[in-house]
Each structure stands twice: as C-alpha cells, then as structure tokens.
Amino acid sequence: MATRRSAPLLKNIFSRLNPTRSVTYMPRPGDGTPRGVTLIPGDGIGPLVTGAVEQVMEAMHAPVYFEKYEVHGDMKAVPAEVIESIKKNKVCLKGGLATPMGGGVSSLNVQLRRELDLYASLVNCFNVPGLPTRHDNVDIVVIRENTEGEYAGLEHEVVPGVVESLKVITKFCSERIAKYAFEFAYLNNRKKVTAVHKANIMKLADGLFLESCREVATKYPGIKYNEIIVDNCCMQLVSKPEQFDVMVTPNLYGNLVANTAAGIAGGTGVMPGGNVGADHAVFEQGASAGNVGNQSLVEQKKANPVALLLSSAMMLRHLQFPAFADRLESAVEQVILEGKHRTKDLGGTSTTQEVVDAVIHALD
Image 1: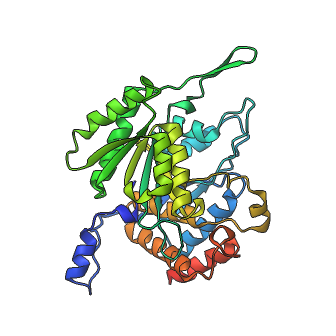
Image 2: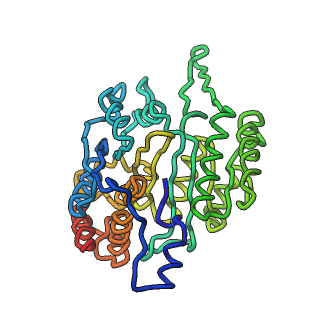
Image 3: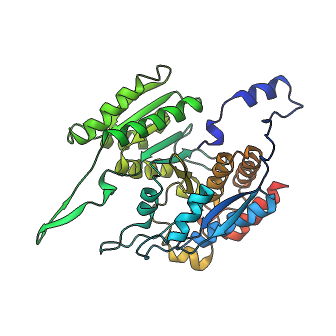
C-alpha cells in the first residue's frame, strides 16, 4: 500500500532529464483487465462519499467495477457473502460503519479486520496545497497494529460493578507490524520510523511491543529509529508535527495519533487511509473522528468526499493502475487549490455533488 507522496523519486529525476516525455511502467499483458472491488457504502455519510467515488471512477473510465453490498453498523455480524466477495476480489472500498455505544453489539469494523487479518492500518496525514493550516511541512504516515491491544474485545464483568478489560500484545503481531512499518519506509524513501508506546507504565505489554520494534529496526540500518511515549507524542504532534515521518503504534494509540495528526494537517475530511493484510486490503477514510453519524451532513448532502477519493487513488495504485491514481489525485488537488468548491469543513459551502462535479471537470 503506497501513496503518491511516498513514491520513489525516480520519475521526477527522469522528468528533469527529459521534461518532454513522461515516464511510466511497462505493463504486462492483461494488466489493463478491469478488477472487481467490493463496495460497502456503510452508514451516515458513507453512501454519499462512496457514491462520489463511483461517479469519478466512471468518468475516468477506471479499470475497476464494483460489487455493492449493504452492511450497517447495527448488524450482529458482517454477512458471509460480503466476506466471500472481499476474499475473491482481494480489495474493498468502504464508507464508515457506525459502532453502537455500549450494549452487546461489537464493532463490524473490528470484525472485518479480524476476519480478513487486516493487521496494518495506514493513514497518510499531509499538508494539502491551498488548504491553510497551523503547521507546514507535515507529511506523516501512521501505521497502526489493527488486530489486538485494547481492541481485542476481551471484557467481562468480574462482579457487579467491576469490569475487566484485557489488553493483549503478542510478539508475533508486534513484529509483523514493525516489519510492515520499516518495509513501508524503505520502499517509499522515508527516513525515520518512530515507535509510540507507554512502556514506562505498561512495562510488559508495551515493553514487548518496543522490544519487537527494536529487533526489526536492526535490519534496516539506513532508516533512523526512535521511540516516544504516547502522551509526549500528542504534545509534540500539536507543537512540532514536522519532526515525524513514519509512526508505528499499537492499536489504541494509533487511532488517537492518526486523528490528531489528521486534524493538524487539514482535517479528517482530506486524509486517505486503508487497512491491509497479507492477502486483502480495505480502503476507507483515513480518520473518521465522528463524521460517520453526522446527520446534518447527510440531510444537507454536504459530506466531504475528498478523503475517500484520495483513498480510492491509493486503491488504484495498490491495484497497479498508477496513471489513473495520479490523474485522480491531481484533479482533487486542483479543486482544493482553486478553492471554489469546498465543503463546510474546509471553509466552503459546496455540496458533495458540487465537489464531485468539479473533480470530474478537472479530470479533463
């Protein structure tokens, strides 16, 4: 899973040597065959923003087709046919699924990650040209372990009024998320990986996570490695976010860090992301921070589609359609830079459809 900003610099080097010719990869026979993608519109603003992606993909004549399934957060489980579709297609694009507060209904987002072993969550938080923010030069990739930690869901009532919630950390899961983070940094010309932890308090659990990160770090001598306690990390993020590059975290910390970094870089409405495992990938808005259930956005049809459009560009690159990904990202960036069509969270008054129409126009 890669983003345009983290792609190797080879193309830019060749472009400077010979600016009149573009450089692209040489496809293998059959590489242009349309690929099936499982589509889950989800809840709240989900149908609006996934609908936006469908329109843009159609306008681009992108080599993908969608298999759409209705899944909602109040279901007891993700339907078996949806799981089978994702296993067949290997790739899914989804809107947010609302998670009920309390009660006995578990999160379908967590279920999906476990069922497909989507052990790595990736959120790219960066300054978008034309979008004013407090800090410049922000380009952070938050890589979060997705399958254990506090999200393991191992809770029970010991006696009335006393609940025990278990945090599970294993060496296997810690090592593989560390390997993914360092491999991502290595392949995308990133210079530093920072492990986020609370090992000063949770000495065994977070201590094991750090031990695993340190072992993996020795295998990548060209990448700088450092560690930061999660509370200090939050303070550093809001004061000097430009110091961070790739961040690797246990499950809960990653959720908090990714949403904080997204807010700093321009808001959750513009940050792409996805979840990946050895065999499958699910792309969605990088940081949600409560947008899914915003009923006023749904009623006014003013949800920001940018984050999911950029996530779908990540999906296209994952499917090895880089030219389509570049074209989509360039169109989205052009619309934001022009500033004429922005939703309320970006300081504008546009509807979702108006932003979509502007992006489609910018594709030409």
